[in-house]
Length: 469
Image 1 (cartoon, rainbow, N blue to C red):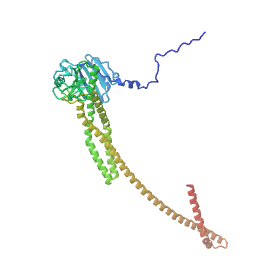
Image 2: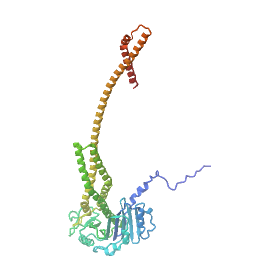
Image 3: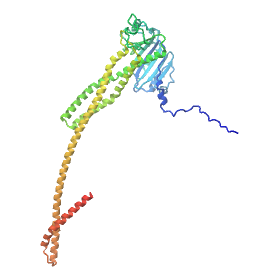
Image 4: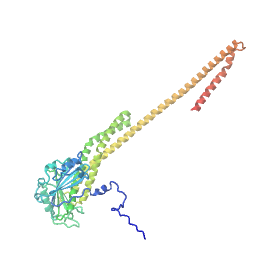
């Protein structure tokens, strides 16, 4: 009968790939680590960013535990540096970054704060207690009250009047966002109305004063037409709040740059003086070395203390420019755009920071070059001293050889004298024994032979010593 075989069991999950790298899942999901919020208009966003140096996740978790219904929250929930909490009538978003932590409270905008109100009090209707806000662990670096309202954008002058009233009637910075046209001019291919405003080509307005209010917050107002999606509203809010946070973080390098100015000026003056002394040979090498080492240590310490701050400033400034580009602004007549305001106010500060960073790096390189020059001078002086020492040693060896030759000559004479004396005594002994010999004559006749024999023996000893070496 035929033999049948049962098929191999099929595994529940087929392994189509090699084993995962341990970081693959975390790196892959990083793009989803901080999803944009979904905001239903009209909405109020109270945003606080605090420096988190010395603040642990445990401390931040303990503060979040004080929110209603969050007593079971643990530090493990904060390991991904992002947390979205839904409370009654309120959502709270917590985000931790390398230098700061952000808290965003989103709730419906109260009726008394809708468009048409005059400088409404936004904090009195906040769903979280004022004490909870004040006790957020850290030091405040940014605080913004962002109101997002619905209104048609087609009547720009009337809308601007309402917005100015809402913001207190002071000068504002405003942009029509989401546009592909650079400016609103009332000219060109875009039809203009009788007020000189173009028909809106963007999706919303953003207005602010970039000023701190008496309550410590900045105020921003976003006006978007009915039908604006919740995801778009979330992206708008995120860009504006990140823009302001990164602007302030970038500016943290400016006080550092200003504080370094006098130190850099003094260090540059000292380096010029040291270089002049090195050129004119008006100071000893040891004195120059001590001064230069002290200067190099001062410059390197300044570099070590501030290089991170300067690099962070450049990184934050790049993020500011990126967020400005994402706004896709179009100017509203009579106001500066947010991007124009930022660049005119921020660019000089960033140029100062960049110049100070470059100045510090250049000073470090110049100190290093001066050190190389001094080292070269010391090396040359050392070589000259070594050469002089070798010359002295050579002359000493020559004198030693001459002295040695003299001593050898005297030694040959002395040895020969003793040998001849011994022969003389031997001859006298033979004469006394009765042999017919004249000791003095025999000794005198043997003097040349003895001298030659002693000299020859000395030469053989020298030859053997040279062969041994």
